[in-house]
Amino acid sequence: MKARNRELLALIPASLLLTAGFAAIFIQRQNLLSNVSLTYGLIFLALCLGAHIVLRLTLPSADPYLFPLVALLACFGLVMVYRIDDTLARQQAQWFVIGLILFAATIIFLRDYLLLERYRYVIALGSLFLLLLPRVPGIGSQVNGAYLGIHFAGTTFQPAEFAKIGIVVFLASYLRDTRQLLVTAGRRFLGVTLPPLKHFGPLLVVFGAAMLELLVIRDLGSSLMFFGGFLAVLYVATNRLSFPLIGLLLFALGAWLIGTHTPHVHDRILAWQHPFRASLYNRTGGSFQVAQSVFAQADGGLFGRGFGEALISYPCQIGGHNATCPLLPAAQTDLIYSVITNELGLFGACGLLLVYLLAIERGFRIAMLARDSFSKLLATGLTAVFALQVFVIVGGVTRAIPLTGVTLPFVSYGGSSIMANFVLLALLLLVSDKARRDPL
Image (cartoon, rainbow, N blue to C red; front, side, top):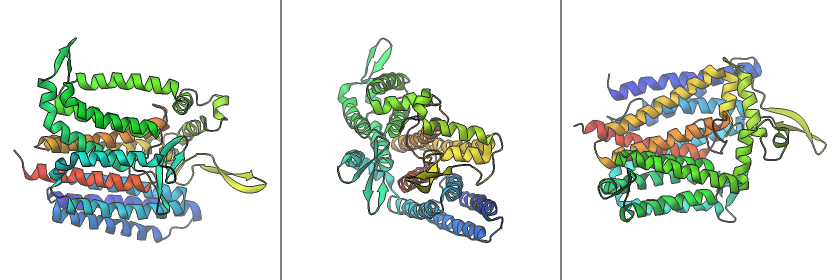
């Protein structure tokens, strides 16, 4: 069976899952099976078919499984966000459509993605500008101590989601030209290869500026993604384990300094270490969110409580008026994985992670198949950033690492994340098509 036919066939289970998910929610809420769920499933399938036709016409040799895996994640996200908030789900569906349009536009107008190499410094400067936007007075917004978004056209936009793609493009392009010089012209010290400053300096300047800006806006989750992606691309480019090891040591030192001298970060670390301590649990901005995340996951058990059964909010009194207070803060964004674990259990959550692992495996396979250095480094960096984003949010809600404010790709509510990740997906498929059309 041809690649595109396999892709078309694989889109059907995603649409069926979306139909079944909405049907389960309708039954739970109204004890009634509505044909609206079938309508939603057909609309979702039609949208995916539109993207499939674009791929069939423009990238006939691209990986046939990556887009269906993303469609599966997206349908899962639409169902979960609808279960949490109907209004947010409608907005999420609109962002999904816009994301598909950006996906198609990237493929159509960027067929020769190698042109990105020529504009690497422009792309790098644009990415650095995007990272600084949330600190601009009047348009930037602060949430939980971090400057993550800007207000634009009545909505909130997170520039870091697109900046991560630009930084990866710059890293892949620059290391393509200097990777050999970083190894052959380097000096050995105590058995470790030190890259020459002449060639490593521009890379440090751009990437160091990006990391500094992320610290200024206090976006810790994006900092970890950027740094991890940088180390992954650097290792693949140079094939020297000493480079990422030195980077990890520097990261550990920097994390210790920031964690002990920055109050906002220190509070996050305390909440991670002692989420059930009463003084932290009851403090504003303390460990309440982390603790409730752990409680929700434990309550789900192995098989979960069922769709719509998670206790996300409770009735309360605010200013003498009846209101609804969140029991699981930011359930549609930061803690959506906790809601999934509560309603579908450990088995359901592991199934979701398996889909992510399959998508990540396809991304790294694309990098392995790529024939030119820029394509290989680009696919590696994009996949590494995507994988680290999943690790950062899942690790945060499960207390493997401190909780930071990033989204679960294609599942959490957020227009910036969906649009940026669809562009990321389009770039990976562009690399895949070129690699499969030009075998050795």
